[in-house]
Length: 486
Image (cartoon, rainbow, N blue to C red; front, side):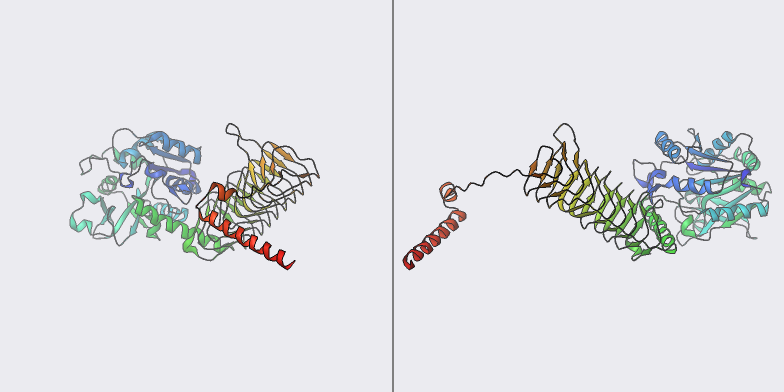
């Protein structure tokens, strides 16, 4: 059979009560994607004729996520009859007269790879089986259905944890909730399944015993990696799956030519991309669809969310979200790039600088202690320490325009909307409220006025007043000696 004779059913109707969460279990994130998203990706890699997702709990939220991830997938609603058997039954009804193989996947088993499922399909078809199960050998089978075999090693039935006798519960071969069936015998025998069990549910697993009793072939394919075949039922298992997936992702990029010094403290989402010769230093998170070009160095202690990092750029102890960092640019340490920040080639964003919704031109620098919001900065600009673009007037946000080759003094405030012309300069402490023409020097310095004796008069009895009095006495004594010498 070809994959055109394959349909995939993804079970995503359960509540997942052990997660203890308002969020449906299949929507919990793993490696930057919801659990069910990983399952849909794996299903799509098999190029099946159809994919159907069965939903019920928090139906609208799950459907929206599924349609965002895979618009061509069919969504099927499970009714009030509980159980995996009923979920597959309603999906089969939606498949109509489809007569090929039906692969059943669980929306909470995110780490299975397409190669494992292809091996399952190959084993199923080679055996001419009516049903083939994916199994795994685990040290602790708690929570999983056990695969019970007959004296010849064939599958006798599957018993769920709550229905298992003590000797059955001791079996370490588990059913991971992944099956492939021939459609016709599946339809026939699902109709015979009842709900006489501890859960009062229509179990899909009961079909296995019915098929066996009807003398159909039931086969088993063992997962080569038991860890990858396990489901996520609680937050502990979610974190274990995250570590497994992250180790897999880090290793893949290492083999592609990236240097990742400490895989244990480096987290990389599955949608991120690292070019050869990228260096990632410890305690760095590369999240969402971040792309890092060749020769760039990121970290340590850095978080990038949906960012673009250019060739040979350096990002050190920084936090950036949906930002663009140009080739050869430097960011950090202790910089914060918010959404819409764009740093041009060979630009610099330095220590304790925050950039928001602003474009900084090629070779321009914002070195220290600054906030730049809603601003366009040209080429070759250097902003002195403590620069602030005051973009908000309590009602509306306005933009600041800074031309090419502008050099500002320290501690400048640019009160938007304002434009600084090419080649202009500003003095230290300037508050710029009006446009500055190209090549002009902008100053806002009032004459300095010293009020003698103010502290002693207005703050009597303070340590400052005492220090001032001592200094004045010493100064007067010094002046007196100078007069005698004269």
